[in-house]
Image (tube, rainbow, N blue to C red; front, top):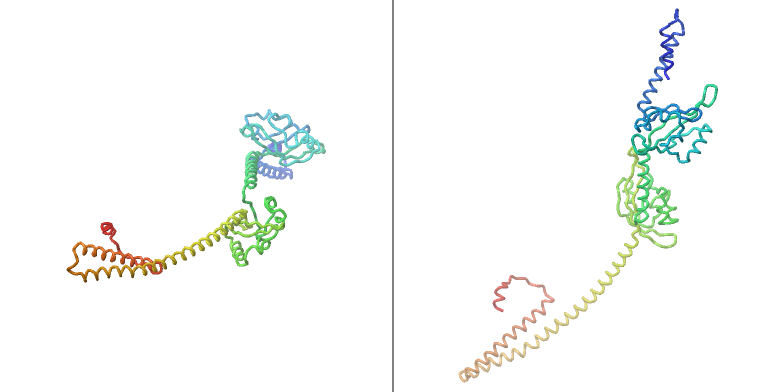
Length: 398
């Protein structure tokens, strides 16, 4: 506690009458002890830990004044000195309880990172401290108490609790999701998973560990496709939507789709791949059913189209035949009317001439209609000829 410094000072104030080796020894002691104290002070000031001691009855006898349960918690050092840890009302017992902790002290066992929950630690409503300690002894070997260090681990505990909560949420999400997580090492061999693959694939998951995907599912994809997938992984490229068929030991089949990305450690070294997989069996079955229905629909449409083509050909043939058969008698009617008009000549009364004119005009229109029907019948087998049409003029004519 600095008594060596006062002793050395007294020796310097009352030096020996004659130079002696004791003076050199004093200089050496001062140099060594001064350097040791400097290092100790630097460690205390720069470290986030605090020093503590207890007496042989495990009562706190020495405690750093900057410990977070003292001044930062609005407590005086005297509120802690002379008391055992289990006598401090603001300190809660460790995981095993006060009885197990006191028994460990009675056995003079060392302990490391033993965590205690503390009210008002470093100004917080509640925090956590971790104590490490060892037994200390007098020169004659008698037990003198404990000495050790403590540190505030509140931030670590809170981060750990948040991580636990995040992992629990992730576990619930993974259990309810159609996706699962997978990881491989630097050689692209599957590493042991968190049980999700085993829950989904059973004994098949055990065959994955320590093997590559293309070793386990060699027949799931063509060799060329596996080579392309391996080339992507060797180059460290992410991949998406790799689909293949997994055959289970029970004889059932499952379609899966996997995506992955490379992973690296804190130094940037490649340590493997990780990603997600999804069971797409239902989607594949739906696609197969849709393809089957499409094939059936295409077959039905083709059959119906063929029937319509046959019907159209028959209708065209009938229209051509009908137009041809009607053209001859109508031409005869028109020719006879014109012949009658020429033979009667001046003998034809005006009203009779008007009737013959109407008959000739009607026959002429009928022949035009028949020619249009024949052109319409030919249009189904000939290319359409496009031309400009004045719809307004056509409307006026109609």
